[in-house]
Image (cartoon, rainbow, N blue to C red):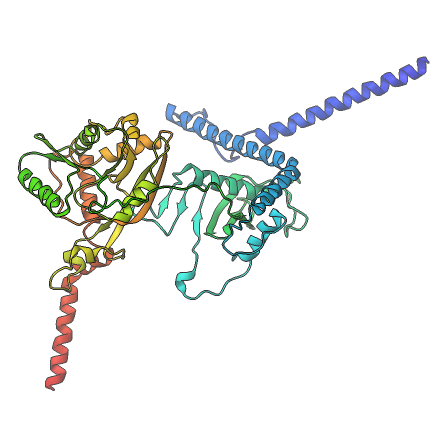
Length: 518
C-alpha cells in the first residue's frame, strides 16, 4: 500500500508539473500574439543626441492605440465567427424553416420565377455560379461592363462619384467601413487557415515558425456589385520580405427576396390644386417690394381655379429662409398636417405630391427628395432662336441638368415632427445652411430619413447673386451652387474653347472658298 501511494503521488506531481509547463507555454504564445509589432531597424526614443517632443510620444501612443483597437476588433470578429460555426446547424435549420414558411404563403419573391431551392446554402452557392466571378460574360457594348472600385486600408477609389463624392475618399459611412474591414479579415482567415482544397502552400517564417499574415500585409483590393447576385471582392496581400503575393477572391451572395410587410396606403384623393380642395398653400413674403404682385398672382389663381385655401403672411424684415418656413409652419392651427417646404423656383407635379404622402409618416419617417436642377436654358438651347417653354425643358438628360444631391431644402414632413425636433435654427442668417442643420437634426434623431431622387421635382434655373453680406462659408456655398447650376461639363467646355472653335470654322470656310474659286 505505501508503494502504491508513492507511485500515485509521483504521478500527481508530474501531472501538475506538466500542466504548469502547458499554461506557461500558452501564456508565452499569447504574449507573442498580442505584443505590438516593431520595426527592428527603427531607433528607440530616448537615445542620446535625439530630442523627442510631446507630439512624438502622443503620435506614438495614438499609433499603438489604433493597433490595439484594430487587433481587438479582429479578435472579436474571430470569436463571433467561431460562435457562428458552433451554431451553424441551428441557423441552417432556422433559415430552412423561414424558406418553408415563405413557400407556404404561395408567393415566390424572386424575380427569375425559379423554384426556391430546398437548401438555402445551395441557393447562395448558385448565386456565385451565376455571377461573373470565374468566367467572363458576353456583353452587348462597353456600357454593359460593371466596373470595380479599388480600395486600400484607408481609401476608396471610385468611378461613380456624383456631385458630393470624390474620386479618392475615406469611407465616410459606417456600413462601408465595416464592410471593408470584415472583408479584409475574412481574407486573412482564408490565408492563415486554408482549407484542404485551397491552392496555396504553407510557408514558414525566418525562424521556421508558421507564417501569419495580418492587416498590415494587405496591399490593395477591388470590389463590384451585381445587383441581382452579390458583391465580388479581389484581395491582394504581401509580406514586406517576400516576393509572392497572396490573392483571395471572396463573394457575398445576395439571398432571395423576403417579404417585410404588405399594407394598404390610402392616397386615393388627387393632390392637384385644380382637383383637390384639401390642400392649403401658405406663402411667406419678406418686405414690401413686389408684395402687390404676389397678391395679384394669388387672386388670379383663385379666379381661375376657384381655389381659396391659401394664407399670405407678410414679414416686413430682412429675408431669412429658416425664419420664413418656421413662421409658415407655426401659422397652421388646425391640427396635424403634412407639410411640403418648397421654394418659388421649384416646379413639381401632382405625382410628386403623391410621393410626398407615401414617404412621410408622423413619428416614423420624413422625406428628403433629391431635386433635378435645370441648367441655364440660354446655354442648353443656344442653337435655337429662343429656349422652348418650361414644360418642354423638364427632361432628365446629362446636358439639361443634374441631380442636386447637395441640397436639402425641399422636404416633406409632418408638422408634429417638425415642432418636436425644434424647427429651423434661427441663428443662421441669409442664404444657405438652415436646411442642412434641420436635416442633421433628423439624422441624429430616431426618425427614418427617406432620401431619393424623384422624377417630378425640378429646380428652375435663374440668375443667382451672392451677396457681400454673407459669411465666408455661405458665400463659398453660394458660388459653388452658382457654378454647378450654369451648364454641363461639355457645354462649359464649348464656351471655354469658343474662340478656338470659331477660328477653326473660319479656316475651314476659307479653305472651302479657295477650292471653289480654283
